[in-house]
Length: 82
Image 1 (tube, helix red, strand yellow):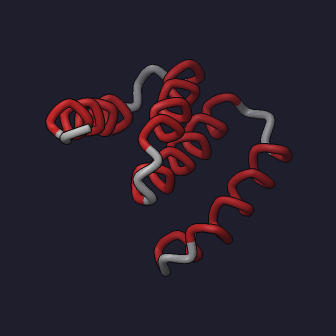
Image 2 (tube, rainbow, N blue to C red):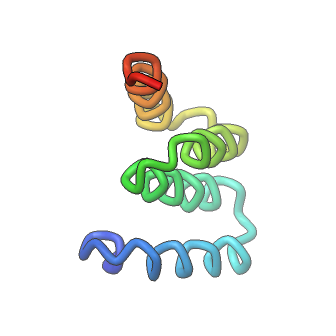
């Protein structure tokens, strides 16, 4: 998480993907997926972000912030000119 907080998103993604490979607990994996979604949101990759938020919610439906972030993305995309 330190790489993410320092703005090194490429390194943070590598760390999270490695954590996904090692972690077996579905609850813990949900938070890893959520954090991957945060990075994709930050990078403007909204489709990828939504994919990871959905995957996080499949493992843990009690992530209200994931629902909020998804709503923000849908609102942003809907209001953005194409």
